Image 1 (tube, rainbow, N blue to C red):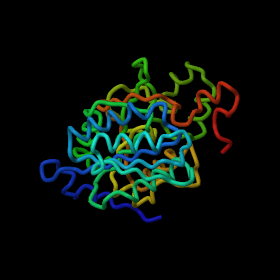
Image 2 (cartoon, helix red, strand yellow; image 1 turned 90 degrees about the horizontal axis):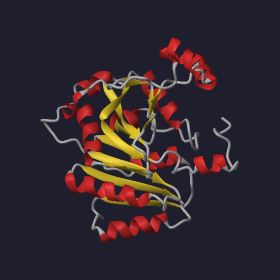
Image 3 (cartoon, helix red, strand yellow; image 1 turned 120 degrees about the vertical axis):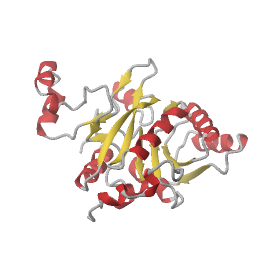
Image 4 (cartoon, helix red, strand yellow; image 1 turned 180 degrees about the vertical axis):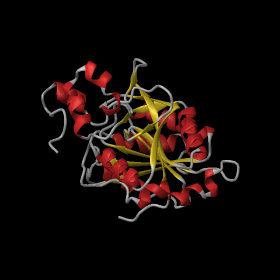
Length: 274
């Protein structure tokens, strides 16, 4: 694997917001998202109207519930054909493959990719805050949003890598152990902005240069753990990830995958076998 040159980012004039506007491509992968895609599209439109730097690529992984038509109709009705591209895949190759496909369709001048789930809605400030932090922190390659559920409760968006001790504490579910070994807890307890091992794919923005240099997501992972693998390779290449508390995104956890409903009905295990 080619090693990244951290000085390349530090010396990049695009890191200075005063010299040039940062172009951002939002990349979203959909699969049977008809129940919740409307709120996402409304948020996207509001952002596109507020800031011309943003564009959108939506990759639909062969939905069978009319998701593609909903998106196509919305783009036409709102006159967003110049800002939103819909790529309709004829197969469902997985989340990582969909993200990679979306990135490959983006113009080469784009500086940042914002990977954003379709089961989200947000204020334009959420996207602007991510751009601001990347513009001001040359040593950080990716920043993640703070996620909250429908009740306004903050949910986990950043994690430590699943090494032996981390995995043990996570599965033990014994609070006193987490308090005794906070440096090994799977979830961070910090409330201010902080560096993180990996960020959830629900909402994180990454430098396009870094994403391309590590060859994007490993498509061996169909669903789940692809973010862990991506951020491990980024860290091995000398890059850092961080949470941005000024970026808050509403997220219906599990809606994109259906894992919550399917788990409760016994149709799916809690985690994939690998």
